[in-house]
Image (cartoon, rainbow, N blue to C red; front, side):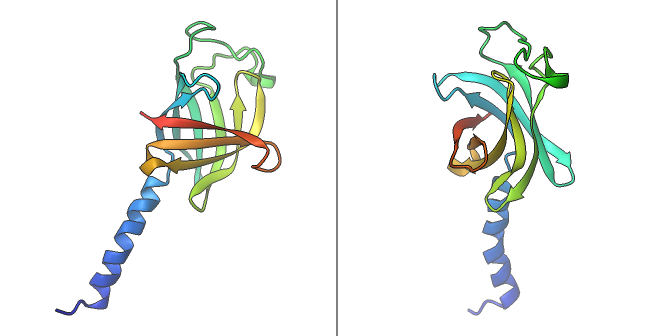
Length: 146
C-alpha cells in the first residue's frame, strides 16, 4: 500500500496543529501562591485583539484581606480599586512555545514586571514568570487550569 504525499503530509501536520492549540494559555486558571502552595485567585486569560492576550482576576480565593480586597499598593488609576475585575497582565504575544513581551501586575505590591507564560503538563498548568530585565532575574508561579 502506498500513501500519496497529500494524506501523508496532512497526517504529519495534524499533531502540530493540536500542539499549537494547547500552547495558548487562554482560559481560566487558579493561581497558586509560590510561598504557601495555596490557591489565591481565579484568573481569566482572554484574547485582547491584535494577536495579544490579557488576563484579569475574576475571583479572589485568599480572603485574608476580605472578599473583595482593594489594590492599596497600586499606583495611578488602579490605586484603591477592587482587585476582582482588574486586568493584571496585558500585551502577551506568541513567542515560540511561550507567550511574552507583555507586562504583569502583582496586586500585593503594586509593581509591574515583564512576563512570560508557558503551558506545561499538556496544557493543564501554566508557568508564569515575572521578571525585571532578563527572565533569569525573576519569580515563577505555577497556575492550574480550571
